[in-house]
Amino acid sequence: MSTATLRAGVGEVPAKFEPETTIEAPPEALAVIVYRDAYEASKAPVPFIGGTYGVLAEVQRGALVRSEESAAVLAEAVALVVETPADYVEALAVVKRAKLAGKGADEERKSYIEIINPVLKFVNDQYRYAIAAATGKGTGAADIAWSKAQAYETEQKRIADEAAKKAREEQERVERKLREEAEAKRRAEDEARRREEQAITDAAAAAAAGDKAAQEIAEAEAKAA
Image (cartoon, rainbow, N blue to C red; front, side, top):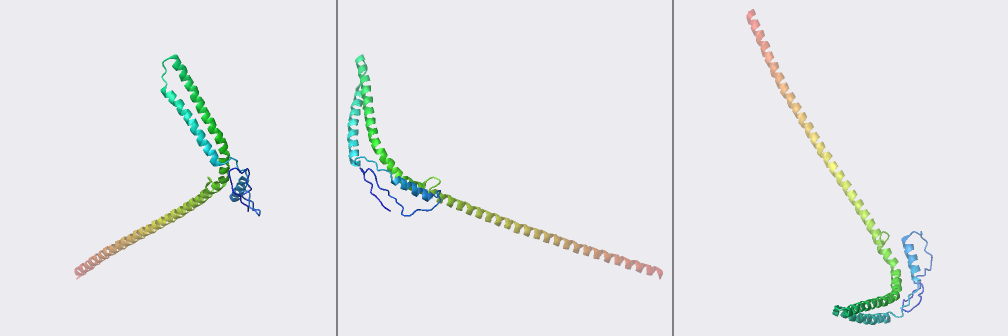
């Protein structure tokens, strides 16, 4: 690939990027688009400004002269005392001079801006694609990586929440089973105790009935004797 040095005063600069081989990739691929646009921008003519230092020095000198003019007319306006028709006419003249001074300064400023703007545009165009590829909204590397990181974080949270839910459900199942087993054991013990008490009652009743029957037999034999 060939390269070129950018210098103020050069009318055109050779291409910075001249691929030796063709990049084969889908047209929609971000990297290919960025490379293509940057390559095209690198072929743009370098704005001619006649030397940056000279222009800025000229701006500084011209601005100082314009500032002196405006300061003078400002001093006139501050010192004005309008009490007579002549004063009134002088005030209007100051207004005119002030507007002319302001207009002259602004037009001169614009004339330099017209010189500098193409340079600013050229610099901005050269760096636009690098900045967009790195930090462009939605399509830049930072946003793409951030979106993927956020998606991973969201998925990990979902997995963690799902695992926590399953753990809670399992804990609730175990506790429910323990409660059911305890309740079944209590019912079984109550039933065993009831049966035991019933057996004791039945045995006592049977013994009492046996005693009564024996007594009746004894009394019957006594009567028979």
